[in-house]
Image 1 (cartoon, rainbow, N blue to C red):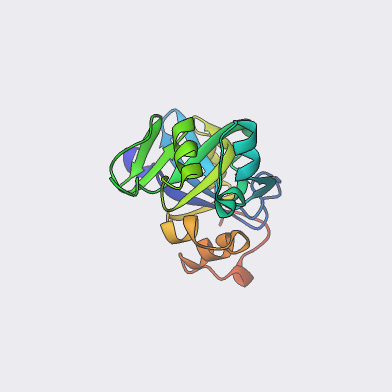
Image 2 (spheres, helix red, strand yellow):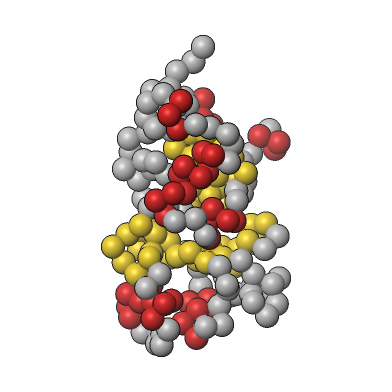
Length: 191
């Protein structure tokens, strides 16, 4: 079954998926195996900015542009836990921060404070997003949701992750696989 795992792919919510955690959502699958799956939503903003997190963690940041970065709702599980999805270290692209997991060449997920300190100092990764919480599926759960047509999947695209406007990421992810939003049914089914 290894070939069927969707590691480092986008899950794109079908229009009929009404769960507010995933509605019109794009989730980057960070891990998918026989035990289940874990992902980070990349297009659902919270009311928080990175400056709010810096304040809570007592990290000084003199760069207002970094402080104004919108924090995303990464998923419904552990919404108090922060994740930084980012490209490599600007001086050494393969260097990782303390608690980094390499997802693909040049794409990392970090949960440690050190990356936030570097971001506040202007020494962090060039491209990043901050998310609170994550999405999780038990063994076989995601596969069942895929069979029920709750999701489409596509190759993850760093341009969508880091550069597309939040309100355009869902449409751009659909466009990346040639899906016309106007042709999608609001309900799924099986032939």
